[in-house]
Image (tube, rainbow, N blue to C red; front, side):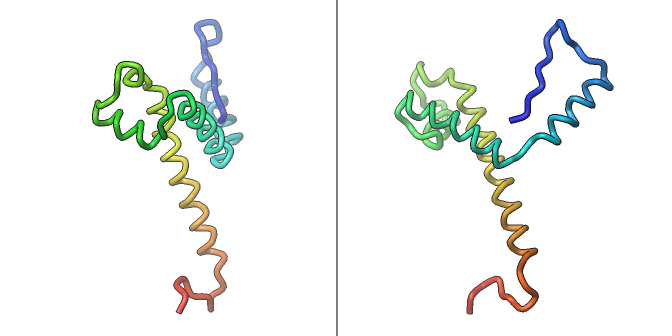
Length: 109
């Protein structure tokens, strides 16, 4: 995932920040981003023995024990994963529809 790191020692001007942001967005690949986040989720799942979907549901309801309740990074990663997954699925479906021949049907007869 493309990242921009800003510290107190390298605060960019607004123009530099716009350029950095444009470069990061140009380098971004949603499929690679999805895989990267999926790997992060897998690590959490292995560490805590629960799926990310189950964790997220319980997190949203406030039903987690003290060890898991503080895992805001995991919840954020899952939220990003769901949004990226939807974005990739939508792009794939759009591409599949655009590539259909005019005589092809969307639903088999």
